[in-house]
Length: 187
Ligand SMILES: C[S@@+](CC[C@H](N)C(=O)[O-])C[C@H]1O[C@@H](n2cnc3c(N)ncnc32)[C@H](O)[C@@H]1O
Image 1: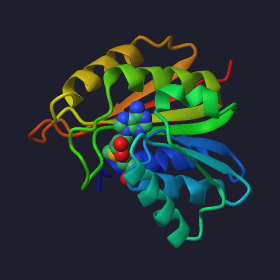
Image 2: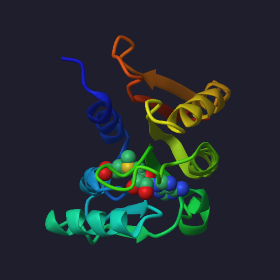
Image 3: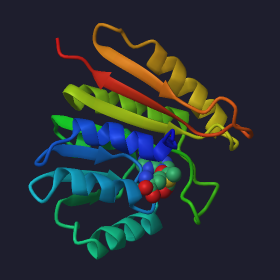
């Protein structure tokens, strides 16, 4: 059976992350992606998890602690547009699971400007054969403009340096989410 968007993103990330790596969760939310990344990197690795909402960071901390994976995580209470101020790299992977906090304030959403800024900073820190995954949600107001802007930017990346994949179900209704994966090529 074809994987849904998040499981597919996780399988691609898992293929590119080794124990001991440094990785970024650019939108911590409820901590599901952060826990997945924490398990990939293990106790010898680092997950930098960003969010602008205190509720999200608390949920992420609790989720990681419950699973016994708190030690390898650094929670950053700042937007991913400040990524390079907190992470020095190199990083094996970064994930931007965009939109709003499920169960939280639906008015607090990721924006095209901040997401593009964070994505550019993540690419600059990415090690060769590292990946950046972005899950985009065109189905809510604001999410459509963000998805369009991120796709236009990703499509313009030079193919000699980056491979860019779009994974989506094109016969689903209501503007379903889709995934972009950007892999840095070895030069
Ligand atoms: C869809 S949720 C993330 C889901 C999360 N990765 C998980 O596994 O539960 C999107 C999150 O992005 C956060 N967010 C919005 N703008 C942000 C920004 N500029 N920097 C970092 N996080 C941001 C929201 O607060 C929200 O928690």
